[in-house]
Length: 171
Image (cartoon, rainbow, N blue to C red; front, side, top):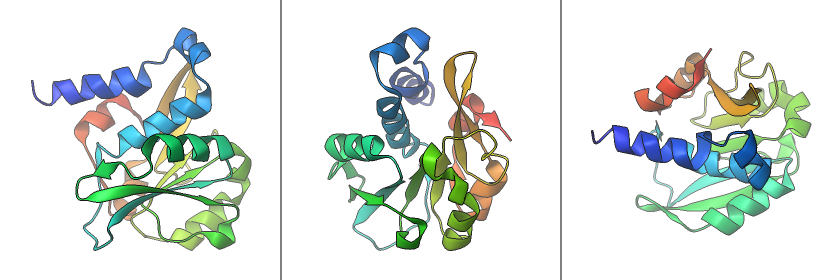
């Protein structure tokens, strides 16, 4: 029962946004909520940093929403730090990188830059899940869903909970 309750909370706060509910919230807010919720179901290797960095490449609205809602919020002993990169050349260390649809044409360069670092790469463009994105948003029957690439997560040394895998489209 303990494992069922967090899953229900995750579903209610992020994944149950049907078409009607999505009309009440802009997609950038839904993506922001889901990025935050993913942090509860993925385990990163231990590091000595005092902050948990969520970076955004190419979407000012997602960045501003994350910054206003989650900046300095606690994640265990760490605090969330929200950063924005304007180009692949600026990419630095981060725990999560959200690649907006408009920046997806640089996906191979992003992968080459990050290599096997423990960075969760989240995208929003058809086909990027199969090309190596860890998580890729997509619409299925007018509902927001997400693909999860277990091989890419393993390569980044990230561990994903079975709860998250159960509600994802596994690729």
